[in-house]
Image (cartoon, rainbow, N blue to C red; front, side, top):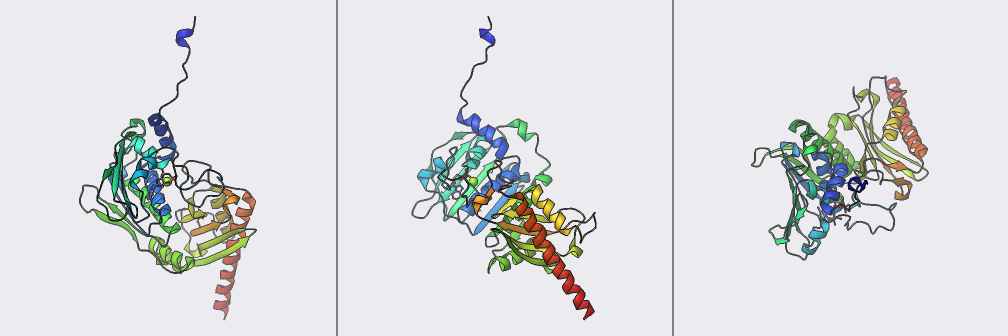
Length: 352
Ligand code: ADP
Ligand code: MG
């Protein structure tokens, strides 16, 4: 009789489910920063201040001046699959960074999370959740927006804790996340502060809110992030093909780099890491660069949300185009055209 060995099927509780989901959503401190800053952007913030200590392992704090959360909604914000951003009827019609309602419950399951928020017309309130245990909503003091604090990330999942890299490497990854999101949102002001050891800490990145149309604002923002040398050597790109638009700035081949460190790609405003798109970027410069050089560019593809699926992975950094060939073709032809024209202008200037 094998009855004793027969496996029993059990329904997992929410805390366990959230810890499992956290494994996909929150790989490291920088992924927590990404989720929290995206929430601030979705809330319409124009100022976002991020602090971290010890590479984000002991503390991540994101403060914004966005729309805030009403006191009664705080427990809901921490519940699984609860979101204010979609109603679930059309997963191909997404205009916000978030939509899965997973980030906050996941972070609350693997760390100690507190949210303090003030929505207009309400008093400020705060709520805590630690290792999946949610506390009550309490009154708080805050003049506007939302402050989310995440302490002791992965204390509830020691296995994941072991995979953390050095404070320096984690801090660097946080900086990269902030820079990408800052490129995506030039009209928002960002600061990043390292508060390791307590106190005011030191500002490691600052990008003041840019004004003007998207090209002007992006130009200013890229100057803040990549430096004047990039913007002085960059071509404005604006090309369209069958409903897909490519905009942004691409550097002249003379500004190329020894590694692919200055390639920033965005799809409908979302920073993505996508082999198809980086491959297309490489292909576009193929005739203009030697094999060991890499192009530098910040490029934005915008299209009807129906033409691209962002719901490929919980971290949402991969996308799937309905017509991948179209996206590739747009990048290759749009950039080649701009580069050839710049080359032509340069040679006629020299000749004249
Ligand atoms: P999602 O972003 O996918 O909706 P989250 O778990 O990240 O899921 O957030 C849950 C909900 O909490 C959001 O839909 C939003 O209503 C609210 N929220 C989270 N962060 C903020 C913020 N900084 N400002 C205002 N509302 C927020
Ligand atoms: Mg979110």
